Image: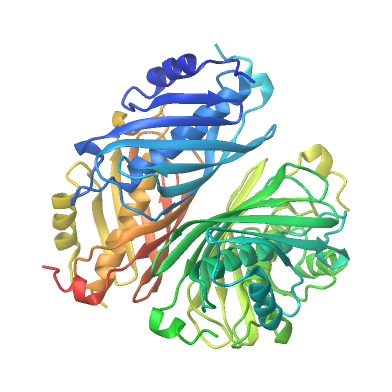
Length: 143
Length: 143
Length: 143
Length: 143
C-alpha cells in the first residue's frame, strides 16, 4: 500500500508550519511513520541528556505525520491527549521516532510512538497519543 | 530464550492470588506475555460490549505476568501508572492481551499491552503501564 | 447551580445499567460528583489492599456521573482514555471518589478524579479521563 | 508552612540549568507551585495557538519546581511519566501553570498541573506527572 501524500509532500508541509522543527521523515505508510531528529545543544539538559520536551515534540510530530499519511491529505488534526514514559537516557545524536496508527476513526485517531536514541537499539521512551480529527467538510480545504 | 518461571508456574501463582480472575496465560517470554480471558455476562455493559474495567484488569494482569516471566521469580510488583485508550468495541467471547516489556529496571518496569476482541484481528484498546519493583532484598522472599 | 438530573435519578440509572456496582452518589453538581464505594473482600488483593481495577472502575463511574449531571440527561458517553496513578495503599472500608469536570465539550469531556481510602485524609490515587460524547441527535433519545 | 528553598532560589537554579526557558515562579509552597510563561511567536502554531510542546514543557517545569520546594533542596529528579490532555486553545500572552503535589515519596513523586491561557479563567490543559527521586545519598550533593 502506498500513501496518497508522499513523505516528501508531508515533509514540505511540515517545513511550512513548523519552520523551527527539523525532524526528517524517513518512512511513511498508511499506518506508520518514522521520523529522525538530530539532537544538538538546544535539545539537551545539563548533563548532556536529551530533554523531555524534545522527545514529546518528536513523538507528537511522528503521530501527526502518520495521520496525514493515512488521510492522504493535510488536515487540521489536533492532539487531545499525550501520555509518555521516559525510561532510558539519550545523549546528543540522531533520535528516531517510530509511530504506528492503532485506530483511524472519523473523529479520533489513536496511536503510539517508540523513541530511540543514537547510541542504542533499545527504545528510550514510549508515547500514546490521541488526535481529534476535524469534520470531513472542513478537511476538504486541504491543499 | 526461556523464562525461569514457566507459564504454568505463573498461572498457578495467579490462581492463588487472584482466584476470581480467570485469565489464561498462552505465551510467556522474557519480554512478553499473552493472556486470554473469556468475557461473559459479568464482563459486559448494557448493549453487550465488554466493560472498560474488564479490559483494564486484563491489561494489568498481562503486564504483571510479563514482569514475573522476566524476573524469573514472584515479586510484589505494584502498578504505579496505567494509561489506557479504548477505540473499538468488543462483544462477548475470548479477549486477548499481548504485553511487551519495554524496560525492566531495578526500580521501575515499563511496558505496553494491546487488547483484542473475539471477532476481529484489529486491536480494541491499548494500555501503557509502569510497575514499581520492590528492592531485591525483599523480592528474595519469592518462592 | 443545580443539576437537571438529581443524584437520586442518576443513582437509579446506574443501578439499572451496572447492577453489580454498588457505588453511592453522595454529591452532584454541574461540574463535580462524589461517589462512595464500600470495599469488601471482593475488592481486595492478597495482603488486604484495594485492587487497582476496583479504583479504576470507581474513578470511571465518578467521571460518568459528573458528565450525566452536567448534561442533565442520560447519554451514551463512553470512556476513550483513562490515566491513573496509584501512590498510596488503601485497606477495606469506604472509598471515596471526587470527580471534577474540566471541560464539557460537544464531542469530548475531560476531567479528573481524586480517590481516597477509608483511613486517611490523603488521596491514594488520581485519574484523568476523557469521554466521547455522542452526537446530540443521538443523545436526544435519553429518557 | 514555608519552603526551605525560596521561590527566588529555585528561580535562580532554573535559570542556570534551563537558560532558554523563561518561566517565572510566582508562588511556591511545600505542596504547590505556580509558574508563568509569556507565550510569544516562538511558542505558537500556525493560526496563533500555543503549541502542545510549550504547554508540556511548562507543566513539566511547574511540577519540578513543586518538588524542589517540597524537598527543600535541589535534586536530580527526572520525569518518568507525563500525561496531558489539551481541551481549550490559548493564544499568545501569559500562560499560567498551577502544580500540586499529591504524593512526595522516597522514590516517586506524583502530582498534577492545571494550565491556563491569558484570556480566560478556564483551564486549557491538564497534566499528570510522575517523577523519580534519586536516592537520598545522591541528593546530598545539593547546594
